[in-house]
Every structure is written in structure tokens, then in C-alpha cells.
Image (cartoon, rainbow, N blue to C red; front, side, top):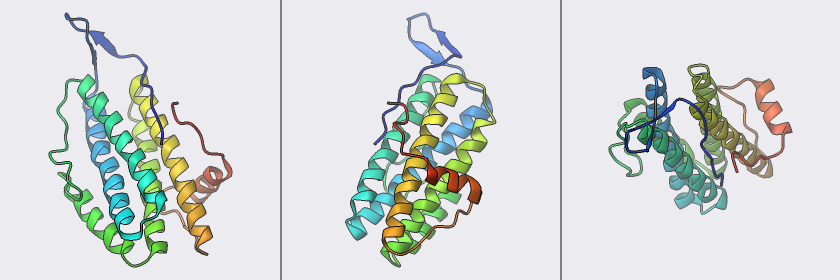
Length: 194
């Protein structure tokens, strides 16, 4: 589980002493999407935890809840409403994420190996999406969050890969490059904002 500290610029004091985070429209859009993408990860891992009773799914689903909470903190600092209308498992406002949830849980139900591959795939997608979002901002607070989330996803993809190897299987990245994936695997797990 990763803990996060959020620090940075682009905050203004309001008249009552509280701080407001100023976000561009693109930053707002990215964070809103990311809130539900982190929920997708949590929900699929909770499904897999229930199906297979493996600690990896419970541990990483808890971490994903922390990620969801940290994204929401930034949205709230910016005075924005939570884009998630439901916290129920498998329910999403974003239709593409709803379809992806169905596809990934169906794939996961095939076998434990497929469930572990789904875990690696989700982290692969998260890393790729967040790396792209990083190019959309210079806001230090947002960049700190993104760095912590990428760090967590790298830890998670390493864990899923190790579990796959223990089961005689492998993962081939679908979103990040093979070189980047191998670089991630060669690194040690990090504290990610602790």
C-alpha cells in the first residue's frame, strides 16, 4: 500500500484561509478520467479477490482505493465535484470503462493466470495513461500525484509479473514498450510518496 503526500504550486488562498487548487480544463478532464480508471482497477481486483482468494488482489485493491482517494482530494481542492456517481463495484459513468470492466472480469474468470494477466494489463494501461497525462500539465501538485501513481503502478506490475512467473506464465505489455516494461522489472519496489 502506498501513502501519498501532496505538495506543490498553483494553489491560492481563499478569503477564509483554505487553499484552492487551480486546474486547467485538460487537467480537470484527466483527473476525472483517472478517478474512474483507478476505480476500474480496484473493482476488477476486488472481483478477482472474491473469485480466487489471493492476497495480491486484496492488497492491490486497497492500494487502488488509496489512489482513488488521492485523485478525489485534488478534485476537491479544485472545488470540483466527484465525477464518480456511484462507488458500487462495476458501475462507471464512462461507458468505455464499463465495457472494459466487463471484458476484464470475463477474462479473469477463465483462470488464475488470466486474472494475473488482467492485473498486469491494468497496470500497463495505467502507466501509459498517466505518462501521457504528465505531458498535459506543469502543475507541481498534479505532477506529484501522477509520479506517485506511476510509482504504485510499477510496484503492482512487478507483483503481478512475479506471480505470473510463479505460475509458469508471462505477461507481454500491450501499452508501454517492452523496453520500458523490462526497465520497470529491473527496478526495486519503491515507497511512492511515503
